[in-house]
Length: 432
Image (cartoon, rainbow, N blue to C red; front, side, top):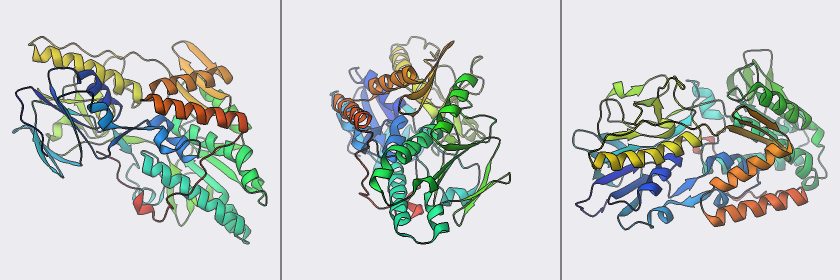
């Protein structure tokens, strides 16, 4: 792996997501050698992946090179590799390009799509956890539209123009709203010879309402916004199968579609090597104490989606979203320095900064403590927050420019099939 020997403590971070980047940025000026490992050479701002899928943004707007983060420190190294296993007895991480020892190990591998054991859906459905998958989805949607405009078979055209999403959390709601805006404001101008009244968008949710993690007020407003955009919402409905372009459910609902998107859940992405007792099987996440130490290990930590920290306020662990990951990363940086100085580590306390989801132009919902916002003001807050947390001035500038252009012109400038979607087998691995 060609990492120089050092007398400094070596901190190995597995994963360049929100948690890993947050920790690395806080530790980069400390007297520590940092080795950051990831399968990709960039950090992805996942909350905006759906905008890549719906052709609102190009991938470089939401991706940031990990080497630009580590180059700011004199003892920091990045290696693009897949981690195979951990040997905690010898304090070694094994990867596809070699092995590296550690004094401190932080696992921040995040989460992957959870299909709840349904292998047929896993094989056939589209997913959206990383940039390649978002590009696959964008290409498939555009390719289906190109096929729909030339087919003479009305049933086949309807199948090509049906869009079905399983899971009405923030990802599903935002993606459904993005597709609906394409249908209303963009596609009729691109395809003037096609009747878009035939295009249907179905959002399926197993719970009694959409956006289950958010307040009922937010759910009600989002339902009204989506309905106004023409999205058909099916609650108390679970998808049971997707095969031969047919979506089956536990109700009478069945839909023929060439575009079926699974956004119904996530599960942890652990790495082989730690004892089975360190993992909570149902969640597939590492059990950590309030200092993010993995149960049974002194110098091995877990952050973000892969870490399940049980507290009185969060008995099932913190939400698997960006803010807990960012805050845990920053807090662990302080605790690692305390540990190196033989000081007791301090427990992590999560500051809930609220939840939000955007449905489309001038339409969003925000839960901020006891306050609930909906409509244009919530949409403005959503835009500001997402621009603020994007890494890099260039990314912020490009994203703001694209949003401004789209707002003024009712257009999305990235409807390009750059990488044709050929095989659903490409739409696979998600973990570090």
